[in-house]
Image (cartoon, rainbow, N blue to C red; front, side):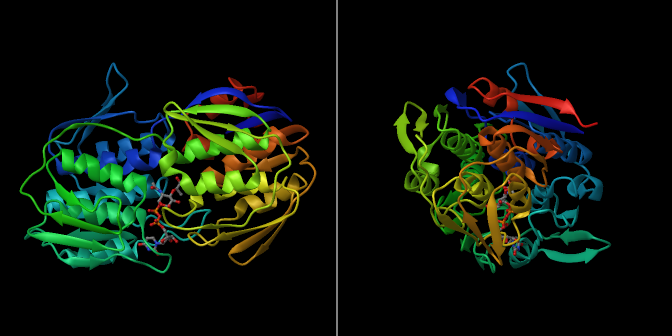
Length: 423
Ligand code: EPZ
C-alpha cells in the first residue's frame, strides 16, 4: 500500500486545475445504461472509483474504454447481465446507482447491498422506496437487492425525503428510472446537488423530459426511448473546495481554475468568515489567506448547505483558528474518523455526538497518521502541509479513490509530498 511523506510547513502559491467531478461521473456512467449504444463522456477523472464503476459496467456486458482524446466511451448495446456483484459493489458503494437504469432498461436487476463504510451506515431504503413507488417489485435475498418491473415502470408522485433530508444517489436512481416510465413522475424532496443536475442534463440531452432541475421538485415525463450522446461532466466542486482550504491552511495564494464558485457558496461563506480572501477569476477563483484564522461554526446539510464532503477538510483548517469552533455533521453523524488522527498532530478536538468542538491551537505537529476514508485522508494531507515536521499519511489508496494526481497538483504549487510504499 502507498503512503505520503509530507514535509511541512509549506506555503502554496500558483495555479491548480480542477478535474471532472467524481460524484457526477459515477451516476452519469450508470445513466448511459438507459440509451443502448455508445455514449461519450468528456472530462471523466482518472480515479480508482471510476475504474471500479467501469468494471461493474463491463461485468454487465457493456464495453468501456478511453478514446485517443481520453474521453470515456461507454457502449451499452451489449448489456445482457443486470447483475451487480458483491465483490465489486462493496468496494464502491456508488455502484448502487446502476439499479434504477437497469430496472428501466431491462425490467430487472440484482445488485448487492452496498454495506457500511468508515463514514457510517449507507442504507438504501429511500432508493428502494422510490423504485417501488414506480411499480418495481423488490425483495432482498442473501445480501442482494432483487428488483423486477416486467410490465415496465409507471410514473407517480414520490416523496424521497429521509431522516437526513434528501438523498443524492436515491434521487439519481429514481430520476433515471422515471425517464422511461409510463406517464409523469414528480419527485418531492429531490436532492439539489449540482451532480444530480449534471445527470439530469445528460438525460435530457438523451431525450428525457426532466424539469425542475436543481430544485427539490423534479418532474419527469416518461418517454419511449433515450439515445446515446456526448456529454461533458462538470468540474469537481469537492476537489475545488479542498484546494481552497489548502490555500488557506498554508497562508498561501492559489488560483483555482475550472471551478464553479456558484456551486460552492456555502464553502465560500465559511472560508471568508474564517479569514480567507476569495475572488472570482476567469473560469475559477483566487484564494489567499494571511493567517490569523478566526473560529467558525459550521453545520453540514444537503445542498445548498455546507457539503459533508468538505467537513473534514474544514476541520483541519479550524484546528489552527484563534478560538473554538463547533462542527455539526447533519448528513453522516459518524463522519469523524479524522478527529483522532488530527489529535495525533496536536490538534485539540472533542467529539460530542454529531458535533466536534475544535479548540484552536497555535500549530500542528507532524506525526504518522492513518487515512480512514476519502475525505478524511484529504484532511490529513492538508494538516500535513501546515504541520511542523514530516507527516506520514498511511493508506493513501483512500485518497486515490477521489482525487486525481493530488500530490502532483500540490507539488506544482509548492508542497513537498513524496509517494512511497508502506514498509
Ligand atoms: C453521495 O452519497 C456522495 N457520493 C457522497 O460523497 C456524499 O457524501 C453524499 O452524497 C452526501 O452529499 C456520490 O455521489 C458517489 P445520500 P449518497 O444518499 O448518495 C441517508 C464522497 O466522499 N440515506 O445523499 O450515498 C444516508 O445514510 C462521497 O465523495 C438513507 O437514510 O448519500 C445519509 O445520512 C462520500 N437512506 C443521508 O441520507 C437511503 O436510502 C445522505 O446520504 C439513502 C441515504
